[in-house]
Image (cartoon, rainbow, N blue to C red):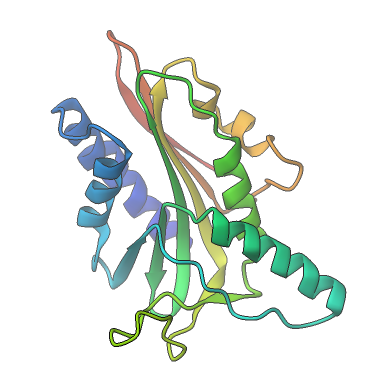
Length: 201
């Protein structure tokens, strides 16, 4: 499943997002997220959730595992990812976005978000929909973190930023290893050469 989504995200990034940036239409992280939402929402039965409220299913299983899952969930509740993409009732991708074309962003929090989300794949779910009458999570709609969930770091930064280096990103934390499920979308900015690309692991 994540191969087709990886291709779609890469195409949107290297074409639509790059063009919008070069035309001066992307001026901050909010407009970058908005562009991604506009291009992806309801495309191929995808739903896009911007900075969603993270209300997790209660962990189950052995007590030690429950504690680990609960700690990961609570950290993500306080530091939600920028974008979730669902297909049906599955969370197909989680994205964190960094927009620093004139700077060298600290990517460690993004690495932590994605690595924690990756560790929850296949074992937990989220209540993303809200009940209109109460504003509370709708318990009827549980979105499970797919075992093949794609973890995506999308960054626009100065050309020599470590945040553009996939090896530096994935090695930031011992647990931040995403075999077969990590997509790094990059925008390398310098006056004479602006390059949008990707790396997949």
